Image (cartoon, rainbow, N blue to C red; front, side):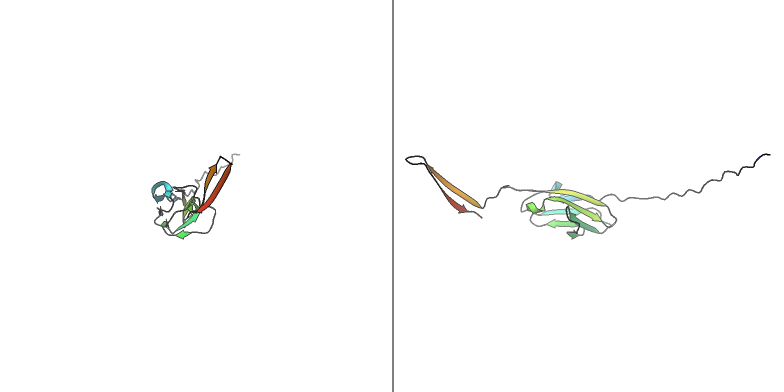
Length: 130
């Protein structure tokens, strides 16, 4: 007795077209995220179709909202990695480096005089500099 086989039926296959948004790109002025101390820095996130929030690495609270983040006078506390995140979850990042013209600012200066003869003597006066 021959057994009858069910004909092979094609399965229904459904494809969904998934699109992933390109991550935002951050442009900076001055370029490359390098700013001199005391100068302004402007960061612009290129994700124009979405709501943007700005974060600084180390904090999960936004520091600003909108396409642009402006720092009026850059200082060493502004150095670090900044992120712009869109509401769809994509993120872009840039490292900001603050260049100091005087990397070690002194507030106190000592002016010393050295006498070798007839007695060895060192005398210093402190001058305050702002």
